[in-house]
Length: 544
Image (cartoon, rainbow, N blue to C red):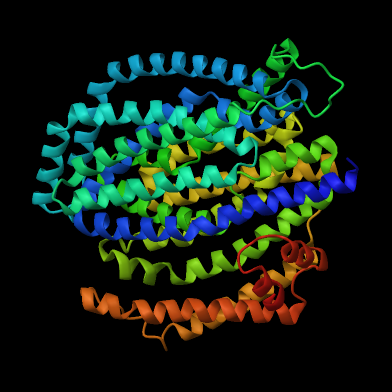
């Protein structure tokens, strides 16, 4: 196969994966919005904070139950199959899960040993609630912690175990650009969990109902992912290089490289965790603050997830194949950068300008979370934009450079330990956001210098200017649309939905028209979109 043919085939694979990512994104978003409306308007601030602390505890243990394995799988599975066939991949995955089970057994013992301390921490977080939380809400959440203590610990253990299994299985599917299966399985979980949680909360089960939903969903998701992986492994493919013998034996050199890559991935996971919302929440020692901060970060992550959806699970296998000679690295990097700028710049500007109105319409008791959205959006969106550089360093196994970029978290950790207890919500947002930007910038600079990479700065200028024009229009039109004075009554909030949606539609049109007037997309990008199977591709090429 010639280089141009391989590059064309790779482009088709990426377009197909992006298509499935994009098609299924709206359903996930709508379901999550509905569940948040129910849960955040039914439960109290301390109850929401309790649930967020439980999931954060599971995420903390999950970092140690992974050890970087899941991040490494999409890097090595394509290479292993190419050289040794899919039977070798099956043996490799079996050994991986033996290691995972051993790690989970150790974590289970540690969790049970620390169970009493965790419950005591939760009860202390109730005592530290501010005076704005009424006595009834305090008493209710305290009783739930005491009555559900065993179930809280069990939920943490189940989330850690099933999360480890699920992430490994999904990493396998990503390795083959199995975006349709990956997205459908993920969609089942994304729809089942919030729907079940909302139903149980409406049925009067409160916190206990949400905990049940948290346990049911990963059980179903693991079963579906396991079924898809087994189906895939039954397809016995021959290696790409037919003159090489097929062997299921795993070479020692591969294990050494996998071990190093996994260790680096674990360092990255740990550094990600240190500058994550899960870690910050555990530092508040106040369930109400944990709830407000988590709602703000969740809103940013939901918007970011929706915008980034076309590239979910695409970049690691994409750059792995680029390393194998299927495409040119600087050109691929520049194309990914243009796509990220196109979706993140206008999305971030719009989110910052409309965050308060969006929260007031949905759940007014969390209006303080709007400040978190404004502070975190620039940082988290910029970090996502810079993520391609980090992925390239990891795929090309430049481990020293990766470790150097991640060393910045050693400075952020003491800053967070001081800033969160001292400055509360603002301290958490600035330390988490700033830490993530510093790490991303270090990785980007190192990748640019190592691989002679470059962004399409002229295109970024066009997109940035169009986003600024859009932002100015939104800011000027908000009072005209009556969004500056949204009441707290349900009818007033419902009446504000239509003007908000109209303003969002106007902002999209303004951005698109402005970008088109400034020059629009690059010719190569227009051609790629036209030949892809992305939704609305004909509209995008005409409009942009």
